[in-house]
Amino acid sequence: QDVAVMVQDYDLNVIAVTSSTGILLGRITADDIHDYIQESATEQIYNLAGVDDEAEEEDTSLVKATRARAVWLLVNLFTALISSSIIGLFDATIEKLVALAVLMPIVASMGGNTGTQALTVTVRRLALGEIAFKDKKQVLFREITIAFINGLIFATLMGFVAYFWFGIKLLGLVIAMSMVLNLTLAGLFGAVIPITLKKLNIDPAVGSSVLLTTVTDIVGFFSFLGLATWILL
Image (cartoon, rainbow, N blue to C red; front, side, top):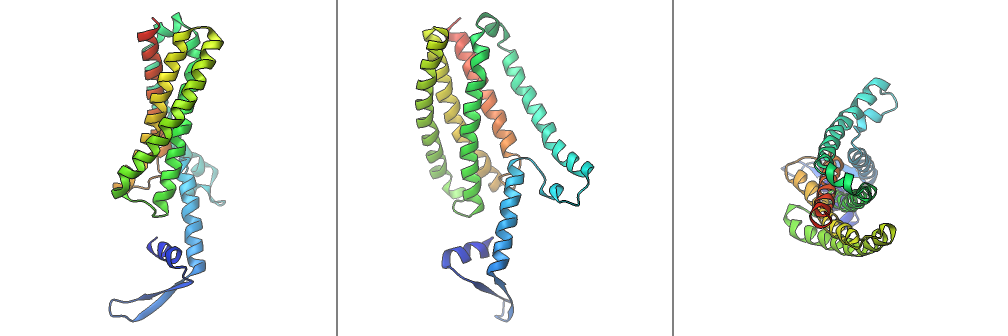
């Protein structure tokens, strides 16, 4: 990775490898760097999707590939149960106002997409060496600001949609407040999760999407249904 950064920064075609006494041991060429970058990019894509890159080789058995994917699907199942339990806390609220059930997926989906955008950009910058743990304040501020501005824009839009759709003014206010909160926190965690994993010497892409989805779902459902219970009922 260090060599790849050097090649990129100084536009080198080859880098000499020497011993501690200065004796030439070999060299690393541009095609070596190309292979490394290609493998790293492939690994990042697989990890973001919760798939073991080794399990996707053509000669890998169907059973092994299935098992490798099932591990992360099992983790995702448990996190989905947590999100569902949050909804269960507000079942009485949903029964009284069915419109909440219609609008819930919108809040969670927007938060999830916002978080994924922040996550993808942060993982890429970490992989390329553009940022490190010491840059966390700058990265967090940038992603939170972007998410907050987008939150205000789409919260306003969705607030009017909800009002004209169901004819309830306060419902538009509830979903707008919830979306601003969820999108802002999604941007925060989309940057925090990979930076924290990198600091712990864990591939920032591994499990990030599962953790992020859990956070955005929980925050989205809890804020939306909580505000609806407080304001509408």
